[in-house]
Length: 223
Length: 223
DNA sequence: ACAATAGTGTCTGTTAGACAGTATTCA
DNA sequence: TGAATACTGTCTAACAGACACTATTGT
View (cartoon, each protein chain N blue to C red):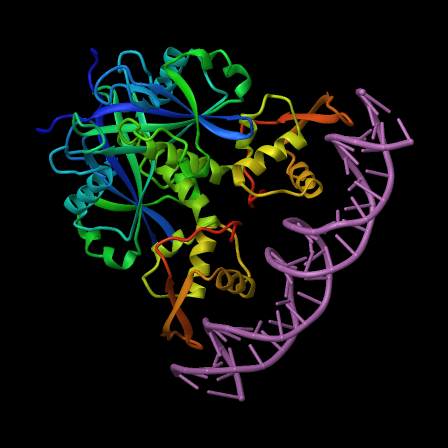
C-alpha cells in the first residue's frame, strides 16, 4: 500500500434568493493557492473535530459565516488529480439554502459576497478558485431539477409564506410561468403545506402556510 | 493545519438481475479488518494511477472482477469517524449495473457471490464488512427511485430487448404490475427506444429495441 | 387448429391548463 | 368606489388505467 492520501474537503454551494434572483455566497480566498480569487465556503475535514462530513459542512459554515442554513444536503463528490494544483484532492460538495432575510448582516463582510447564478452563470466572477465554477453549476442544476419534484424551494422563503410567494419562487427557479389557480390546486392537493395565520399585504390578505416537513417529494413534476 | 488525512476509498454496489431478482455482487474480504466478511467491490483510490474517482471505480472493478459494467454512476459519499475501525474514512459509493449474461464466468469464483437484495435486504449476509449493508441499501433505494423516471433499468438487460422484457424489469424493480398495452404506449411515446430487428420466442415474434441513449429522463413516473 | 405471445382499439375517470368570475382587503 | 390581490368554478384537451380485441408466430 504505497500511495499518498488525497486531501479531503467540503465545499458548500450556499444559495439564496435576492430580488427575485438566485444568488450564491462566495468568499475571497485569503490563502494560496488561488489567493484573492472567489471560492465556495469550504475547508478541510478535521478528523479531530468532525464526526462526519455533514458535521464538517456545518462547522465550516458556522466558523466562516457564523450561520447555519435551513437546508443542507450532499450533492456529489468531485475527486480528481487536477482540481487542486497541490495534487490529488477530493471535495464533498454540499447544497445549502436559506431565505435571504437573515443574511443582511453577513453582506457587510468584505470577504463574502452574493453572486447571481442566473443566465447560466455569466454573472459569476470570471476567475473563480479551483473548479468552483463547475461545482456551482452542478449544484444549481441539481437544485433546479429537485425543485420540480419536491418542496425544496420552500427553504428559500421564510418559515411562513403565502401561495403567491411560493408560486413566485417556483417560477423563478423553474423559469416557467404558472397559472395561480392551477398551481394552488396542485400544491394543496399534495398535502405538504400546513396552514398558519393570515398574511396581510396590499390587497386581500392571504392564507399563510409552512412546510409540513423539511422536504417532501412528488411523483410528477409540479412546476 | 494539523490533522490526519482520512482514508479515501471507492465502493461499488454492483447490481444485476438473476431469475427475476435483484442481486448485488459481494466479495469475501481476504484482509483485516473484517477479514472473512462479505463486502462491496472496492478499494483505495490510488493517486498515482487514478485520474479521478470514476477511474478508480473502473480500475477496481477491472482488477477485482475483470469486468466493466454497462452503467456506472456515483451515488453519494459516506464519510465519518466510525465506519472503519482504523479511523476516519470516506468512501465514494458507486452504483453499477449490467445484464447477468456476461457474469456466468464470474460466479465460479469462490470469493465473489451474488446476494439477493429484495425483501429489504433480508437475504444479505448477516455480518457484512464495515457499513456496507447500509451502502447497499442506499444504492438500491436510489436505483429503485431513479428507475421510476429514467431508462436506467435498461442496463439490467442485454443491449437488445423486447418491450415485454423491459416491462418485466420495471415491474420487478418498481414492485408494481403494469398493463402491457399502457406500458407500451407510454414508453414508445417517450421516444427513448430505437427499433432493431425482431426477436423470436415461443409465440409471435416481438419487435426488439435498444436504448437510444445510455440514459434518458422523464418528467413523470413511468412505472 | 390451438396455444402462446405481440400488439391495437376504445372506453372511462382523472388531471393539467386556460380563463372567467367572485371575494376581501386598503386607500 | 376602485385598485389590488386572493381565491373558486368550470370547460376542454390530454393522459392513465382497464380491458376487450386482433395479429403472428410455433407445434
